[in-house]
Length: 162
Image (cartoon, rainbow, N blue to C red; front, side, top):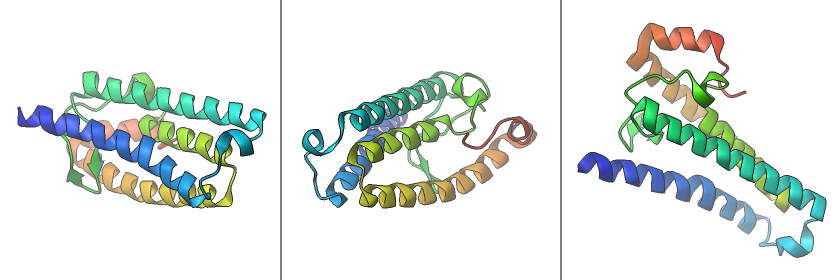
C-alpha cells in the first residue's frame, strides 16, 4: 500500500512541477501575457505542437517505465521520491534517448517558450535545463551502480538526451 501511495505521489508531483509549475512560472515571469492577444497565430501553432509532442513523448516514457522498468521516474538528486525502476529500459522510447521523459519535458517547455516568446521564459527554460543536467549526472551514477555493465553498454549506444 505504501508503494502505491509513493508511486501515485511521484506521478502527481511530476505532473504538478513539470507540466504545471514551470510553465506557470514562465508565464508569470513574462508579465502574465494574454496569450491569445499577444502571440502570433503561427507561433501559437508551433508552440502548441511542440508542447503536445513533448507531453506525448513524456507520457510514453512514463508508461514504458511503469510497465517495463517496474518503477517510477521521480528520483531527485539521489533521493527516492517514488519507487525506483527495477529493470533497465533500453527499448521503446529509451532506444532513442537515455532520458526520453526529460527530452519530452524540454520539448514541452520549448513550446511554452514559443507561445510566450519572451526573454524571461527563455531564462527560466535555460535555468531548468541547467538544473536538470545536474540531476542527470546524479541519476546516471545511480543507474551505473544499480545496473553496472548493462548500463555502461547501453550508454555506449544511446545518447544522453538527443
